[in-house]
Image (cartoon, rainbow, N blue to C red):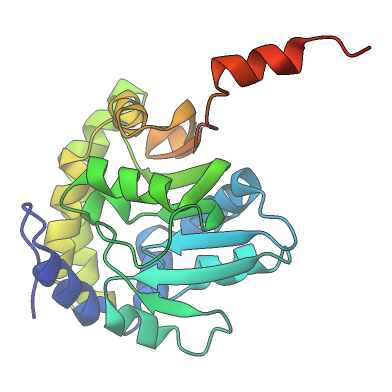
Length: 245
């Protein structure tokens, strides 16, 4: 069984998720006490996918969330670096693409919206991934990220960091096809930036109107942002402002 290191080597990350693909959805529900469904529902609401829009669901895993976004009438594609994860979701009726988040195989300005749930912390260069997400999003398009974060209530934050994260690998021994991988997942959760720091990284990558709100006391946070529209040239803006006869 394999696990990735905190340097997040792409090959190791892909192999690790190939190893947890079998039974991954069931394991998620057990490990989160069913809260994963609630978090996905909030992501769907905030993304607000609309009929005929094109949506990229990045690090989509078995495409559980992709199917939920597609129920809106949008055309949604599931992209993931782990072929094993995509294969485990082969029965779900959405297009699937094996893709590296740092070099997405899509043209500029291809999507109306892009989203990633519990995957961005596994990319070995967060800012580059955010820049790639911006590249393939249309100007004015939106991004939603659902990811683990830092509990805001200090007593709960202490228990979460000191005890709950350490329980994950132990629970995984009973429910996961690759329990050793959950040692990495717990470590990556403990070292992941807090809400404000991730918001700053999103801005640094070129997104605007960055905002976030907490779910489950900040154990998970939703970040949303918009890709800036091109600024009008000064002459064109002046002509548009001139009154017509």
